Length: 162
Image 1 (cartoon, rainbow, N blue to C red):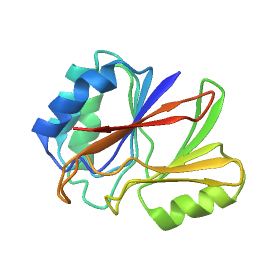
Image 2 (cartoon, helix red, strand yellow):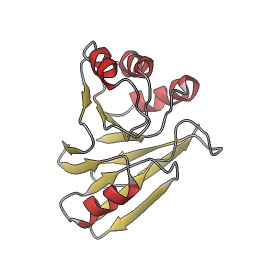
Image 3 (spheres, rainbow, N blue to C red):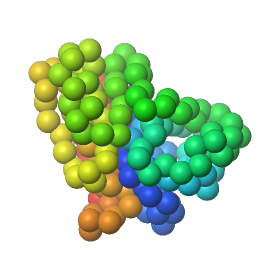
């Protein structure tokens, strides 16, 4: 299974549109927080065409109530709160927005992959048997707009710069 991991889109519809062809070619998408506005949820729902989307809240996510209402119009969008614990094709995954929390989840030894965002920095490392992954920022504030595609079996990471 190919899993797309994105974070920190911060309402950048142009970068989200550029990412969409990559996201549609996966079997699941994880968003590590800071989507920000309800219109981004609509854009994701329309663009993904049913590819499941798993979202955790970031520190800049605004109208959570309206984002949740908009998501109800699309099959496959699921908000998990601050932390998500997922099983994707047998791969145990935890998702959170913050690097410190993510490292703690990776150190717990319960997950094979832990994803996070917040600092907008591309990062991946092995913590024991766990892949600790930050896909970088989709918005491009620090110059590069990036996402990651992970193979659920090998944990190979493909980096995509938009």
